[in-house]
Amino acid sequence: MRTVDVVVIGAGPAGTVAASYLKKQGYDVTILEKEKFPRFQIGESLLPCCMEHLDESGLLEAVKTKNFQKKTGAAFMRGEKRCEFFFSEQFTKGWTWTWQVKRADFDSTLAEATRAKGVDVNFECEVLKVTCTPDIQMLEYKDVDGNIHQISCKFVIDSSGYGRVLPRLFDLSKPSAFSPRGAIFSHLEDKNRTEKASNNIFVHSFDDNRSWIWAIPFSDGSTSVGIVGDKEKILELAENDGERYKAFIREFEDLKGRFKDSALKFEPRHILGYSIGVKKMYGDGFVLSGNSTEFLDPIFSSGVTFATASGLLSAKMTHRHLRGEAVDWKTEYEDVIQKGIDVFRSYVSGWYSGDFQTIVFAKEIDNDFKNQICSVLAGYVWDQSNPFVKKHDTILPTLAKVIKMKEKNLEGKQ
Image (cartoon, rainbow, N blue to C red; front, side, top):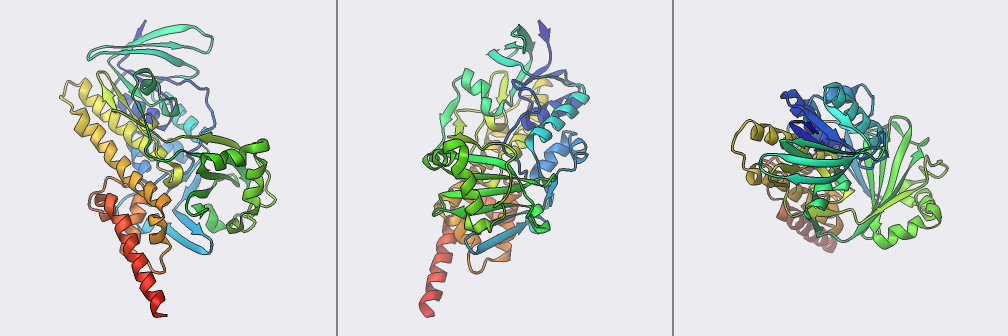
């Protein structure tokens, strides 16, 4: 039986950031990944904040060589209304750009760069059993040939994403407070893309804020196009091999024919009921990171940023723990990650209630407010100097109410 310092479950962004950081500190690290890379994954639009995590873990330069599509902002649209955010104008001092990526290429790049650092990266290895104690952790896994292996370590970081290995094995999952939603998506040729359209993610709201469309351009001239809505709507669009999805995106008025004659790179795929939470993020000998903790909603592209943020912080905490320091996992890890999740939860709620859209589609929006919101959209959800972070649970509904009253008064005077 092999013995290492740390086992990381999952080779996605959370796992590779954690493993690379720990390897840099001199630990013997093994990654066990269930799937074979490259593999398809959604979550294709990054946020500027995650660039800091990639840089600190030593993975940024490897990603730069791939020439992914640069992303400098986000645009929200509803009918004729439009609001653009440019990361260069945000309130928080930080990265002013990031990338839009095909996750198969992005995740493979991270995994290859992590392996090049000396981390033992194992694909097609399914973790079957985990036993954790304060001192020693035992894992049992099955390789691609069906052989069963055991490995022991001092600590386990679960970065298994949607696989949620430890939440499933240790009964840590809990339902999300959000209504069940789903998404249907594909990659399409994008011959009608303008130069301006290449550097932004575009979000089109419709159906009284209950549904929306994403358009995420890639550097190869294709674009990811997805529709998010309630489960019934997504199942309807997925009927007959996604024929209704194809017709919808080609005929949707706000897209103005952008994909009218576009060929699909693959048949539409759909997922349902993706929002989920956990009872706790840590325990004796283990910690959860990435989507193994909680996944909210794709509306603000927060998934990869939470993955890299929690992957990096979990690695730093593990490093301190293995050095013999007294670590308060509740206040120094879970509460920190939860604060960021809570900020985005307020914005997701604000999107579907309409408060966020009332603000960004107002006839006039205060520039300071807009720049502060922009920092949230850039992923800087731990910056307590930003009022739109510090007062996240009240500021959107309060401001939306003020705007509605102001616009109603103006209409009454006309």
